[in-house]
Image 1 (tube, rainbow, N blue to C red):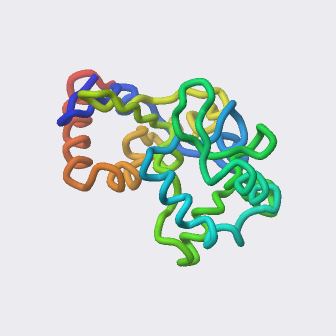
Image 2 (spheres, helix red, strand yellow; image 1 turned 60 degrees about the vertical axis):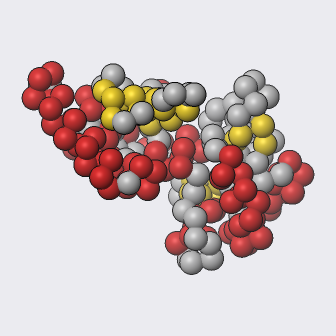
Length: 194
């Protein structure tokens, strides 16, 4: 683990390579799994605030799920905040393009200027998962078999995870923190990299 301020970063974030390959996986991470996308408390308030602006971008079944369950729900296994799901399947905020690839209805609304919030940070940061503890924050690589094509493309293009998620890391922690992370990655590669 590498420590920057109160953040502990898994070395996998430096050593593993990853680039989403939506043409292969079709955005399965928005559909697979037992619960919706992880949210922090602040994001639950944002989802409540922007629902009316995002609603026109969503599928009818997504709107129905949100109207019945709420803009967010509690994960029954650990009481963490998550996005609601459509009949226990995909995230309620998911839309599909003409090729059947998942997109985020919130992000589409953001791109059109309808809202000022891009999407949950957990989605933007994927495959990094952030766990908040009382005295530190852990950033770990979430390995998931549905992302094998992303791992293959990352390896082919030689893009380490921390570079793939540069924009969301800056969104979450700022430019200065991200530059410190890059410096740490360079030092790590010099000592341990191949």
